[in-house]
Length: 235
Ligand SMILES: Nc1ncnc2c1ncn2[C@@H]1O[C@H](COP(=O)(O)OP(=O)(O)OP(=O)(O)O)[C@@H](O)[C@H]1O
Ligand SMILES: [Mg+2]
Image (cartoon, rainbow, N blue to C red):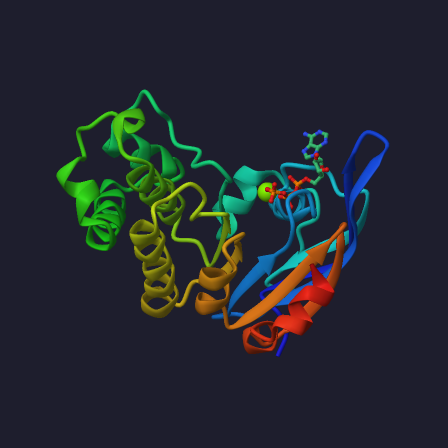
C-alpha cells in the first residue's frame, strides 16, 4: 500500500544550521504516528517543512502520491493537509466562532460551513457554550481545542499536530488525546503528532518515531519503546 504522506531524504535548517538531516518517514492512511524526541531535535522543523512553512533544502514530500515539496500552506490546506502549530495558533482577539470561520476560510458554501462548525462543537461541546467568547480569554485547554477545531474546519485527510498537550493539566491532556483518537476513529483522519509527553504520545500512537539531532533513530511499535533500556539508548 502506498503511503498517504511520504517524506524522503528531507533536509531543512536555519542559516548555516541543518536541523532536519535526511529524514525518511511514511504515514499510511488511517494511521496515528507519534514523533518523539528531545527539545531541539528538529520535530517542529520537520512538521513545518512538510506543511510548506519552511523551505526544504533537499528531499521530497509526497501527499496522496503527488510531490508537494515546497507547496504553499494554503494549497496544502485546500488539498486536505492541516497543521495545528506548537503553542495553539488561534486568533486571540477574535471570538471562538470567528476563529472557526477563519479555519474554514476556503469554504464558500454556508451550509458546509455550518455543518463543519457543528462537527467541531460535537467534538468539543465547551466551544459551543463559549462560541461568543474571545479566544485569548479561554483556558489553555480550551485554546488547544479551538486550535484543533480550526484545523478540522478544512476537513483534512491528514492532521498534523505539534505538541497539542504542552502546558496542559493532566486531565486536559487526556481530553485532548481522546479527541485525537476520536477524530481518527470517527472521520478516518490520518494523524501525524509530535508529543513530548512519552506516556500520552505512546498511548495514542499506532506507530512511534524518534528523532535525535535531526535524524530518525527509531521507527516502530510504541510497545518497543516502553522498554526502558531501548528508550535510554535513543534519548
Ligand atoms: N526560527 C529559527 N531560527 C533559527 N534556529 C531555529 C529556529 N527554529 C528552531 N531553531 C533551532 O533548530 C533546532 C530544532 O528546533 P525545533 O523547533 O525543530 O525542535 P523541536 O524538536 O521541535 O524542539 P521542542 O521540543 O523544543 O519543540 C533547535 O536547535 C532550535 O534552536
Ligand atoms: Mg517543537
